[in-house]
Image (cartoon, rainbow, N blue to C red):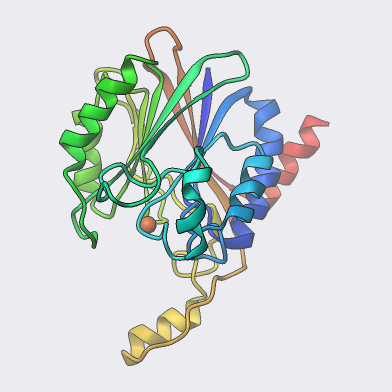
Length: 271
Ligand SMILES: [Fe+2]
């Protein structure tokens, strides 16, 4: 059973290539369930209800997030009305929203998604993702063994450690947040698929999604400059994990970083 997990969707360039790639991949790779990190899907900062609706309409089943979840204030009032939109479980419990979700594939298999945040080099009041994550995984396993964890964090060591911590208990642990894909995807010894960071689904002619001249100016002068989302060279960063629905363990993980012409070629081949 193929589960598609999409790295940080950034702005309209990210949403645009997501829609095109999803249309092709769902058919060509027999994708049964799709998860995407959407914390920067609205204009490069935060997410709105309209953007969530657009992404759900494109075929995404569950959306994860991280430190940018509250950038657009309107989401505070509506996150509790969107059960498919998660914020990290280990955020303070008084924050709105939730950290896990259980959905179903087209063939009726339950898939749980768990969103965690790292604490190393991350700001904010986060609880321990290791102990809270394990407790939530044990609770979710009473409902389904097919569990995907989005570990949103900066430090590759912390993300790798949580992969091993949950190895054999979940189907996949994938990292998001850095916007830079890593090529360490593998199935860990006890059967959990792992990748430190899926990378950004968004404009690569940029500095991690932001218009590059403004970022350079800030580095060169130390002066504040207005950050805008870049537009050029949109790419689709994701992984497909083949999961055994009986055991919940992964058979393989296949990582991809598709350019627009790759998606176009795949669409042509499919017709
Ligand atoms: Fe982030």
